[in-house]
Length: 187
Image (cartoon, rainbow, N blue to C red):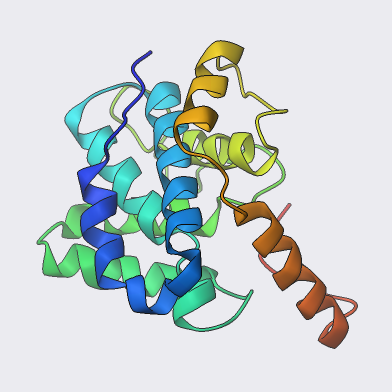
């Protein structure tokens, strides 16, 4: 499995949002690069999977910062859609929106649209969900990836306080919405 030590599509997209991310720019960028590497390893290396994984990774949590909310799935999807329309990648909108919408699903993703999931050039929503889970669990859940690969990616792209920042945001949300501290989670 190849570890990508540079992900130009993520760099390009996130540079536009640097002023929103502020001190969280490097922690978020590293999170995106880890998710990207895990997703590509799970779904297979081809140019479409690489590009789709990079775009989805860059946008999947971005609404936290652009809209200052932990109810960020819809704002993140909207940003991705605008990017894809501007890049004339309209055929990818539904899949990448679904990757963003389902990335915190606690159970296996099953497509309602008739598209599958996997390295056979079909939708890669489930692989993206698993990739985010590998990172959110700090590599404790590996989703079938080799331990050595997970360690290498985690080492190449250090956490830089990303998970602590998520914990801070969750605690803030808990104070105002005690019965809905994690609105982005799905069954």
